Image (tube, rainbow, N blue to C red; front, side, top):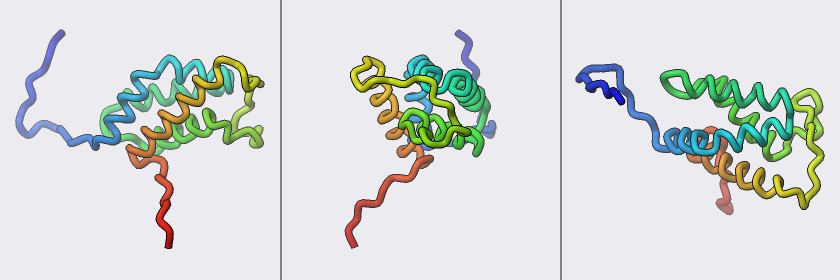
Amino acid sequence: MYHTKIQPGSDLRDMPTGELALRAYLSEHEAALGHAAVLLADRRGARLINGIKDGLGQPGPLTTRLRRRLLELRGLLFLEHGDDSEEFDLVAILEPDDPAVPEICLLADGLDDALRSAAIFPTPDFRVA
């Protein structure tokens, strides 16, 4: 594998730790997230995953469009668009005992944690006034 030498003054920037964690999570679970999105939303889910992959392949910080797509994926995995038929037509009617359900739940929770650590999805404030 070829490595390039880092030149002083090159166009480098510090990537926040939360964004690194998000990118690592998405990379590690890419196939499972793709399968879940297709299972839940068919072609729209596939387009969403492909858009996220394309966005992650671009240099620089996460764009607004990519952030919006990541939040759409989160909403899909948490079934938050169940009543909004225009957003996603949920294809799969999963039974609670379907083996895919716990896997989707784990993916959703992991994505939620990664989005919160990257400050893309707000962390709830549990302080009591």
